[in-house]
Image (cartoon, rainbow, N blue to C red; front, side, top):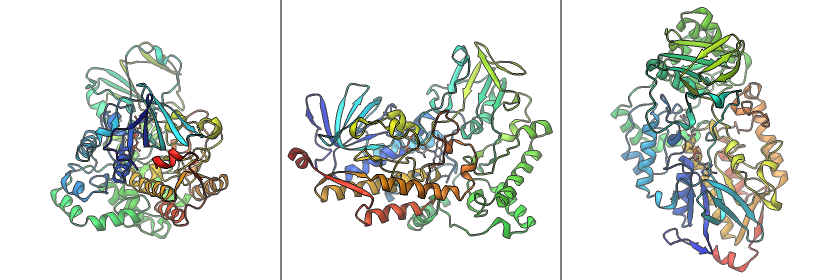
Length: 553
Ligand SMILES: Cc1cc2nc3c(=O)[nH]c(=O)nc-3n(C[C@H](O)[C@H](O)[C@H](O)COP(=O)(O)OP(=O)(O)OC[C@H]3O[C@@H](n4cnc5c(N)ncnc54)[C@H](O)[C@@H]3O)c2cc1C
């Protein structure tokens, strides 16, 4: 293996690496560190100007970590890192997470192997060379034995296609592409489309400053108090002192959170007991509302109703105008859309400068240069905020659209569903590895920890391949089928697939609509370890075709 301290091998204008990583967010940064530690030559490309991915792009007001909360939304691979970084708040704001990631980049000298402001335009598997050929927007071309796609499960912004939207002449911002310069709402009439996590975080902040906010709501949501508060020095000290135990708890928890799992059914508690517990958890806030309540909320309709009714009751109490409260009333199973933590979202509708438009009964017809027109009237606006989320989980892979064996593109391969094995690999795309891809726990897990665990598996797989003197690995069609059945079998035992959400692809027209994430929690990591222990059961290997490639290994 060549070392990344050496300049890349080049032939003509092509740079040669052991591995190319696409993306310098939480996942790509760890991937770089890990593969460099293994002694591989690695190059990372990212379209952004610096590290951070999600946290570099999502600078909208109110953008914060929610689950599991600080100091546990962090890397776990370095005790020194844990010891030297202090978190100020339990729900760290975007700038704090970005500062942490910048610190990680400095500390592990990551930037020297990252090329920023570089869009990977194409990635093609050259079957003869058994290497990935990558072309970028800057003209740099690279080849690599391994292609790591750390392209982000929430990184491809979903831009709504509404008649006249491009004619709107005022300021227009997508929350996931927020400007780096300060945005002033003062004195402005602002419309916000979207009431998912980003919209619900941003709306209270915008309403505090703007002259008027029109919230254009398609789906009423369940939102829970964030319970944000300072992380005390004692808490930081305790997390550090018990770090081994905390980490072990995170590894065992289904979501990668530092809490013990519990086995209480909501249906075993009396209504009074449930109400008391929900109230206690509501007052405390945070994702622990789910972690510390009951284990059948996402499985049993009856159990689900107990929590949903509790939150609906809270909305009725908080929102003073009963007609507005009814418009805010969610009617899906609680937790079956991405749970949202808020900082005064429902209270915002008690303000005089906020109007709620229920798009189910009053849909948007069009935009004009200075307004949004709904069925019942025109709303003059100066600014439009698109909190319309992402083409999630599979969107960034499809946007990259790598080409595998036989010139088959990923868009062709994934036309009907997101074929994969272990959420890490795709048949016909040898040596391509995804982090947080479809078929993995991805967004259902504490994502920095998930990235580390997936990347450790990928690194071991690469090492094994090279130890065996082999060149390429890819899954069989049968193993992809078996994995798809396992993933959908687990999902179908829950209420999740029964709700339209970005988890099911329902927010993107034309996208295959099904639940593609692995919901078995930490079981996933047992499964992928088991496959590795059985010498990568379900995969086929390919020896090196050419002597020079074997040598390069
Ligand atoms: C507002 C917000 C709050 C969140 N809060 C939490 C939380 O509390 N807990 C949690 O676990 N997760 C949270 N997430 C999810 C978050 O996305 C992950 O935690 C994590 O940051 C993902 O890191 P990543 O490296 O996998 O992807 P990303 O951070 O999305 O990075 C992907 C990178 O790939 C680059 N890229 C993609 N395609 C290309 C290409 N073709 N060429 C070049 N570059 C490319 C992008 O520019 C981007 O920088 C949140 C997400 C958002 C948006």
